[in-house]
Image (cartoon, rainbow, N blue to C red):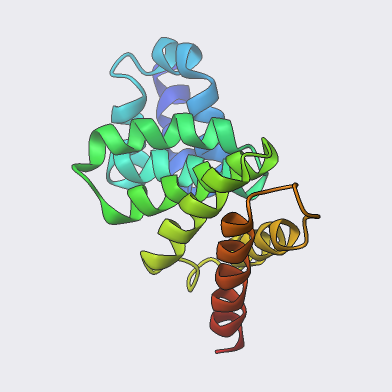
Length: 169
């Protein structure tokens, strides 16, 4: 009976497991996953998504959508180990690091990482990320004198303008 239950659960995860929340829950429940799937999380992600990497990326996207940037970065580190330098993974890391730095008020790092993310061609397929990055860059460009270095404020204003131009397309 347990074998049949396990098989049915796997079928359900394959049919409905494309959501980020499902991938994220599996990632968070690593020990429980090992108890049910002795092959481990990578094998389970492969069964559900075709590749373990895709499961980690989907989980990271779920964290990003919820503004859990440190958790997204942890998951993206796992994806990076499996990706052999995937540009999409590296670009997503730039975004997550930029937004995490923004919320830590490290505006110089934030603008640098978000600039790298944007220059790598990001945003077109993630309008919500563009919107949030723009909100962050606009905040930095409106900081009072002394709130950030003048160079950082200028770079934030430049990035804000580039994002606005892309959004109008």
